[in-house]
Length: 613
Image 1: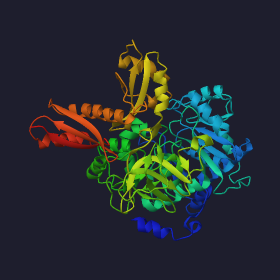
Image 2: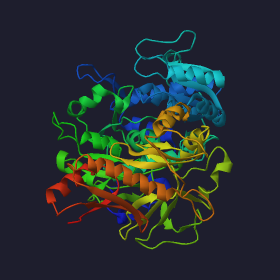
Image 3: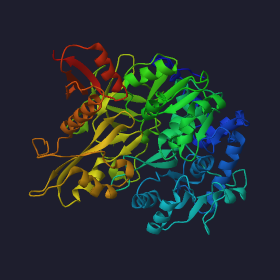
Image 4: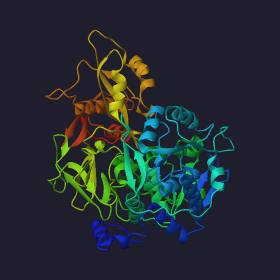
């Protein structure tokens, strides 16, 4: 294994011809190679519920590959070809894994967020050229089937169901039964190649027209293979992966990266990390399964750092996190309280989940998202006039927009018209503002684009704004992200009203919420303004609203622990990063300042404190 400690290790690896650095150039090839080496090792340990007394379901690599073969044979027998998709609406359980990788052999996989509104899901099926829909069947813990029923009414397509607990809808074929009737070896030549499309993943919160990023087998194999060099993982690694497979974190960053090397993924229940019983027994499951790695986003870390350690967790070697900005203080608290090293990740759907990883074998660099992947190029270029200036370079430490190219970069969206501004001259324009330091570490300091990241979930503010503007009292609406200790960001709405109209903010939110395109996108709060901040040409100036949202949030959080002490918050942008200044009435009080700092530890905003006395 080529262990990465520094950029020099990455550059050393790159001296090998690319084909020699990888055992396979397709997702199927990586899984098959790992199975050949470790047929009896556990690929998955599925926890049916959150009770320690309940036996886990264990799937070996040999069984995984056999079931992937059966799924591919099934999909091909149902007419799925290389240009067709299998749409998948199901949680991260073994059957969904069989479907994801089997669909990539027969045709294309299109995993879909089942929390989206049915009309959006129907549009994704159409855009992906889905030949069939695979859904979790009727289930008391997770109601996906109700959504699937509404989707097929909008976009008729053959439907298969995954039955859990022996419950199944009448007159709908059961996936497991159909698999059992298939051969456990491939019955056809899939003609796989690195350039063949393997999947399409929806991204950006799904705007009015479907936005599906295409992945080639080469894209996914690249991130799936090289991640372990940074993670310091091997076939003995046991990781908790509670992420859904419609997100690149669950599928590749914490998924294929383990399957490629023969590691084990613990899949926690149908509800994943949201299962209350599992969350309560999290550390005990770590001890029982001898977990060595935690797959996180900052929201999960914020929960775990406050969860009583009631088990022996000396087996846990690292917690990896990504999806939204990692507050440095949260990482420091996690390491200090739990003794588990934290490392950060930067990823995008449009590059199969990974841009950079912070190596475990090197010290954590606060504020960093790590080093670029091998055989890729990451640059920082100026951002002017709403566009990346690709012909120019920013120097070390200089802020600009992050762009990248390499074998993991998607060929584009299913709708090529959506490529403008994102894919240009062979580069993927991330929309993230940041810089690269002298050691090659990438630092993200903000976003040039408006997508709000709630946990690891992308929210399109434009669709939320449309829901508000449809209200008869609303003239203008702007939705921005408010920092949050648990979710990273939460959407908040600023509105102006039409002349002569009056509306209570809470009443307005209650009226609009049912029309917001998905539940996680519903704003936490609504603020009614006399006038929107605008630019010289009349466009809404969202940076000013983001600063105001930060001020409101920090004022709210700090006031709760200030014990009646008066304070004020002012947020401003400095050199591309936001800094909040907290002014506290009275003489300097070190204990008060420490309490205030601690309550903001999980909020990703740089904060300065001063006393007025």
